[in-house]
Image (cartoon, rainbow, N blue to C red; front, side, top):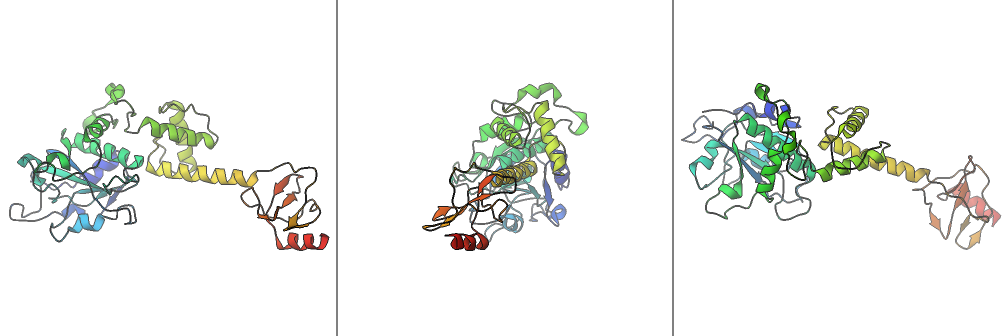
Length: 346
């Protein structure tokens, strides 16, 4: 009879972002068979999805229901939750009503650890973003190692009768292969996975990230000035570039393109693209006029005040062309001063 008070530590040791929900270490459903709200043991890990629609906002909008339960099923409904961005929520250390009716007593809630991942499960293309699935696989791999090789199944694989449940809404066989390919490095007791680094299934690297995901991150790093071969492999150059980026943005320098790093990378690429767009200059034709509607004026003088808008200018009848103090011609937004000057010259 145990309370699983080591859940947060196990997940953090795997390098995952963890949120500890208040009171989790003593939370567990108490009933006649389990008056202390504990579990018998952990023989397996059961994967679920919440079925909460995307109209519910936030990273883990199902937290209250998973913690407190529903009118027909008292909470907690799982020991762990997984947010849309891959953040883990530690909700309960004791018994959770997650399994329901099962095909074998060994699959029941008294012997299993339940994980409720945030997903609608309706085929919505927004379900299962890469950062969430990568974190799901890594977290399950860490838990499986900690609980002496516990089996991993989906709720749909253990429920009774067959077909009563459909969660999680992804291929469990493929997911188990991904879990098997996760490299946790040094594990508890000093056991290392260095001897099977080549055992990752096709399409995934040894840390549970897809090669397509790594390729995308390499391409984004290149947009920021790095010079990487986009091959989907986390080689020394990619790891070094990732660590450099993480250092610049005050992130943990582990060389792993996890959710936090990916979010910062997206923001940096967007900012770079926006800045580049604003700096874009164009050589003006021989005869350039600034005008409003059908009225035409002369070229605005060198250094005339102007505002650049997205590098393409604001069209009001005709395009405004303005010469900067550096002598470059750019498309600029009309200003009150420019409008007045043009009208006087027109």
